Every structure is written in C-alpha cells, then in structure tokens.
Image 1: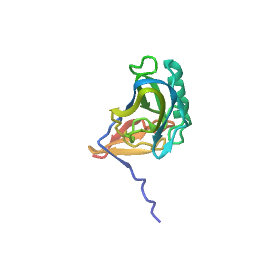
Image 2 (image 1 turned 90 degrees about the vertical axis):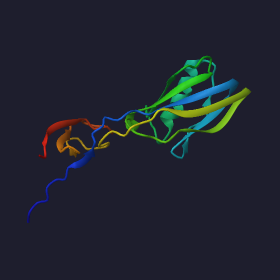
Image 3 (image 1 turned 120 degrees about the vertical axis):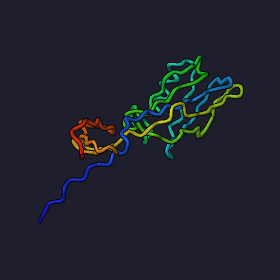
Image 4 (image 1 turned 90 degrees about the horizontal axis):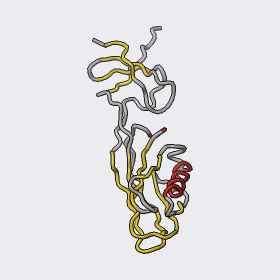
Length: 168
C-alpha cells in the first residue's frame, strides 16, 4: 500500500499579521461606579472605575485576564490619553489573540456615577490574521509563489515561517 504524502498548509500570501488595538473612551465626569465589557458573547466581571489611572488600568486588566475568551494578557489595557480616570485606554490584543482580527468589544453595562459619564469602544488598529495561525511546530506550508516554509515556532498561536525550499 502506497503512503499518502503529507499535505502542505496553504499559506496564501504570507503575512506576519497585526495585533488589533481597540480604544475605550471614558467621557463625562464620572465619580464612581462600575462598568461591564462584553467580548465574544461573554461579559467581564464588573470593573470599578477609579480616578487613579494605575488603579483603573489594574481593574480593567484583572477583568480582561479573567475573561474566558481572553485569559492572561489576551488583551492588555494601557494608558492612552487618560487623566484622572477620564480619556482613552488602549486595549491591545495579544497572547492567544495576537496577530488576529477580532470582533469589537462592547460596553455591556455602564453603571458609572457622576455627571453624564459615557463609555465607548472603537477599533484603532484593525487586526490582521497571520498566515497559518495555530500551525503545529514543524508543520510545513506553501505560499502563492510556491515557496515552501516550516514553522520553527515551538508554541503559541502565531507561526514563525522559515523558508526551506520551493515547489518549482
């Protein structure tokens, strides 16, 4: 019985991908309260607002790390132009969500107190899916030009493609 040759993963036009960045904007004049974010059908735990930027970022990060679709560092909160808990916070997708186009996170519930507190989320940098996400280590692929690659990454969702030859 003849063996079936291994198939090469079709990599199409090879791309390294781009991490998605979304911006959470806190407006009005909040003085307290909580808010809940929603991503891929799941809610975060209530996030306590704080006028202390580092505390607010830590509260957001803890909720994102506990989110079932994100996990630790699946989305990292960092200061954009936030002052005293008001302004923009960058939400950068990474870890298992690196180099991927993800859906827009939404505000599920705004329970902030104060004068007309608002929350909005927008995509700042759209994610671009990397070629061969979740390829196994040593898995091989071919791009549209017929160049053959091997995944030299040892783990993780994003492959590291190294040229090994050509189909031509």
